[in-house]
Length: 414
Image 1: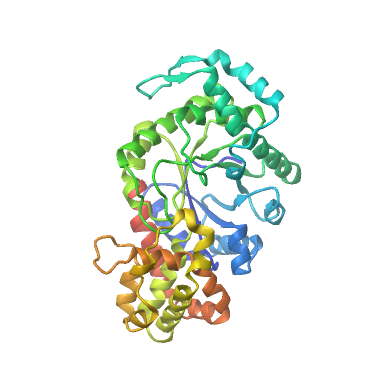
Image 2: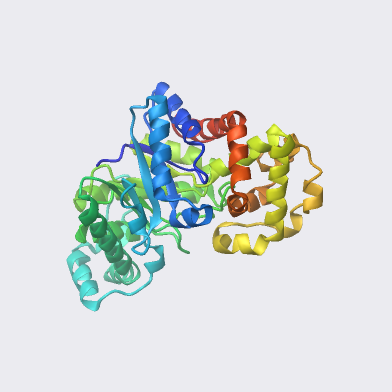
């Protein structure tokens, strides 16, 4: 199975917005750009919401059937490991193998020696087409890469072959994720990570490295755009070299796990794609859940009351909700309005606080981040929340579509 040049991964916490999401991709297709949609959901999200990967597959298939869609679409087992992969096997055709937890764990000495011996002939200045200066490769750097990443790549291979044995080699797309770690990978590291994946027989089609800067949940990129641009362009060139040098799939491309709404890097990504004629896989995480809240706030009445209740409960349970995401959120708790204040706001005011519009003076990144990680509250509400989604699907769907098409797809591809 071959992943398309452009693909867009979109989350849907409660599985109700598949049609609106697909409509955004169909509209892009009608305007001349074919982008595969990839519905993604992680084991942690399933556990919190009380769903399974079968639900994601049903949502995707139902959306496709209802729209008569004939383009490419996939269902992603998002950030799986060996302990969680079984729950995704029957319903996924895209597997994001997450090995970040194994980075830095030292592998077998014989494996290290074999790897270094194989690639030490690369030592010296290594010129990569598209990168202005040569990569400086030394035996010490090779040893550093081997000691830091070889065990993680071997673990990725173990998971890949487990999936292959269950599904068959041509029945799924393989992504390797190394983004949820402390330090960005250098071009040299990325090159030899890919070499190791090839050595272990992993036909990786997309890889998600850690990029410079902060990719906090639900808010814009925080970091130096010039540094990101240099890094992103170098990584594209490294991937192209690796595909040819290490017999990896020719469609190998970068995956950017944005945590949603990294609007300021989109022009950088688009310029790099056009310059190198490269593809991209971009994953947006929980944007859809926040668009549901915006739609409910705009609907007013009991739907607005529900949003206020969710915020109130999230504010009280701040530490609990934020703990799993502490490395990817930056909330100033002292600047969050107390629930009594939030409860007095009318629907448009609530919607403006949540909606990611950096030019709006009432947009509040602290509120947005808290609600981003607060979907557990809506899951606990259960039927009342799901009924509100059904009752107000039209206004919610309008927000979901506009967010994906206007704020994501258009600046990236159109």
